[in-house]
Length: 377
Ligand SMILES: Cc1cc2nc3c(=O)[nH]c(=O)nc-3n(C[C@H](O)[C@H](O)[C@H](O)COP(=O)(O)OP(=O)(O)OC[C@H]3O[C@@H](n4cnc5c(N)ncnc54)[C@H](O)[C@@H]3O)c2cc1C
Image 1 (cartoon, protein in one colour):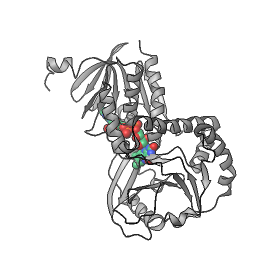
Image 2: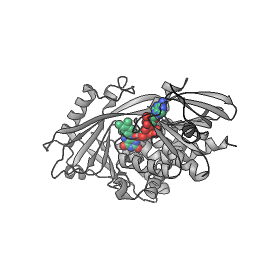
Image 3: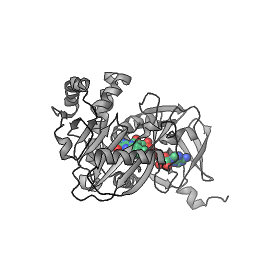
Image 4: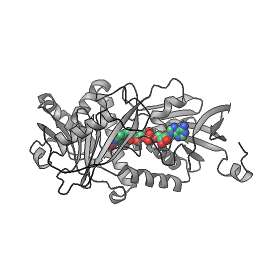
């Protein structure tokens, strides 16, 4: 252990107004919002890894706000009001991403999203009108969800009976979004320290905390945890459970018919085109407890299930290899709702977007910003 130089103390380790732990989408969008509201704030993000590593760089890149099956499932848990509040935030979150980044910068493609069903379920169609009415209010689109069974064959899908389209959904390149968002945050004057692992904090007085990381320290007025699935490793009594999600990507498939983002089995399987390749993720439901881990390796159980699903339902007529395999980790709260809260004097957390943070976080970060600034003198 060696001391910091005066140059380091007066620059990189100088006293901050807000230290954010975690440089994924939540940490970045919130830092940008804080700077927009109070440009003079001194903000540092501590990110443990060379590249943020958890969910934001490891996801499927769906810009989605909920398939009919998922919306009905969530409505049963949250109630109608809460459901539509969150759906609206997801929809507006996608619009906010598009306001900040041109489509070609982040490969945004409004290709449409679909939910596939293995057997016809009239109860979904009975409720489609109500779902569409609520979505009309939010999106201005009259028939957001439409039955599209006739497209199953032209998309090359097999073993499904029904298909419902959401023409407003799309896909994007998560790596590009995170990279260009990080640049925007840096350009707004936020310091981002990579390879900086938060260790602990100590309260010096009501408006001063000392943050320890990598045998270094930095003082700050406020501290914000955006550490998603890793939070329970850092803080006591936090009910966020890690949920690993695994993904495979095929080699290029000439004449691939698939285009769009797809959900099946309450979102437990999801796939999309990626150029002329197929990206498929999910199958977590066959080994729920094994997948409650922050270990970013892949498992044979899930990888085999994904390969079988791919062959049976998505790519039965194509020749391909699996060229990429990886996993990421989501943070799940008990009721599937995001958690934004104060946990100590001038200490806050914002996380657990439960698998749909790409769309939700841009808006959620505005609420988190208000929560943090509420306590700020
Ligand atoms: C496989 C998979 C597929 C998904 N697909 C989609 C999708 O298609 N569409 C969608 O909307 N959402 C999707 N999601 C969810 C979405 O990616 C997340 O909701 C979102 O990225 C969460 O962002 P975050 O910043 O809260 O968390 P993270 O991106 O996990 O960021 C947390 C950060 O905290 C850092 N950290 C942890 N501990 C420390 C420490 N001690 N010190 C410093 N830093 C620390 C980590 O390194 C990490 O970078 C998916 C997630 C997964 C895993």
